[in-house]
Image (tube, rainbow over all chains, first blue to last red; front, side, top):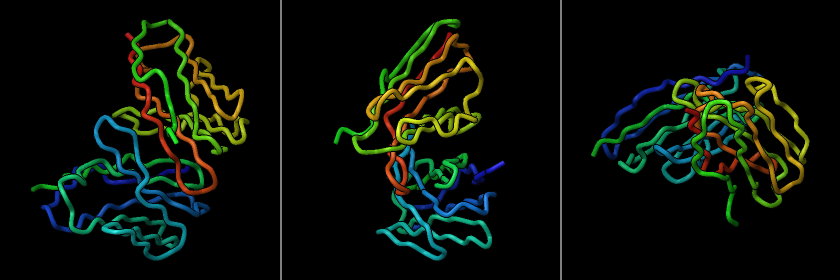
Length: 107
Length: 112
C-alpha cells in the first residue's frame, strides 16, 4: 500500500509565527513531492514541489525533503490569516495525496 | 489559458440514474487524472490517462464507474447506476512532465 500520511490538525498558530506541516510516505521509490493548498469549497492549488533532499525556498514557503527518513515538510514563515486552509502533501510517483492538515492562523 | 474545465459544477440526481462528468484538460498537457474527495476518505485517485490511454484504473471503486478519453482535449467519468454513497466532489486534473497537477474547479455530485 503506497500511502502518504499527515496529521489532520487543526494546527493553530498566531499571525506572524512559523507554521510547520509534516508528511511521511511509505513508497521508497517516490522521487518527487508536492504541497497543495485547498481553501474550503475550492480546488487544490500547487504551492511547492521538491525533488531533491534538502530545502527548497519560495518566498515565505520552504519545503524540506529527507528521503532516508521518508519525510517531507512545509514551513510557512510570517503566517497570515489568509494562509488558513488545508494543506495537502502528494507523491509525484503514484499520484497519492495525504489526508491534509488544516491550518488556522489566528489574528 | 482557461485552465482545466469541468462540467457541470453541481449535479443532483436520483439514485439509479446515470451521471456523466466532463473534463477539458489544459492544452498540451498529456496526463489527465480523475480524483474524488470526501470528508471521510480525502482525495482519492480514481484513474489516470497518459496520452489518452488509461494507465491505472485501480482506484475506480467498482464496475459502476467508467472513464474515457477519446481525444487529448476531452474526458468523461460516468457512473451508472448512481448510489447515494457516490456523493462527493469529483476533480479532474492535468499535467505535463513532473511539475505537479492543475486541478479543475470540481463537480459536486449529490445522489439522493
